[in-house]
Length: 136
Image 1 (tube, helix red, strand yellow):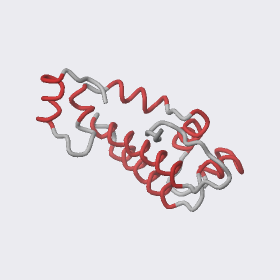
Image 2 (image 1 turned 120 degrees about the vertical axis):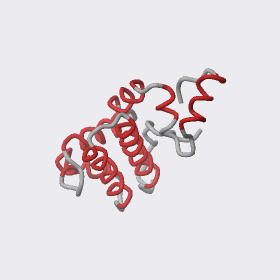
Image 3 (image 1 turned 135 degrees about the horizontal axis):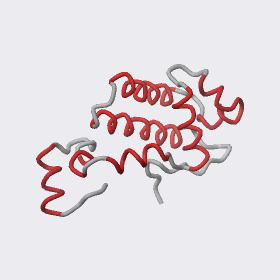
């Protein structure tokens, strides 16, 4: 069974940071993409993308930072503010991010499909109209 974005990986002491890191970064990037689709403030979109970049470059899982120093340890990392630290803590604790789930649900289906690389406006429209698909 593979991990999907939004799910926390099962962790053991011997795990490399890659699965957790990849999932957390993917979630932050997806959120940034959804915000961009909604014409959100560019600074906010960039903040989530920068945070994803920082997480991917870490040599240990975010959960170790959180366990060692709480959210303040996350905020001490470059490009991680209080809001993003809270999001990371939620994802690590529950394997979900309610804010991402909320934004996913607020987009029109065609706009939602356009957040997937390779799907433009025309293909998104066909997915909705011809296949009657409304969610990812």
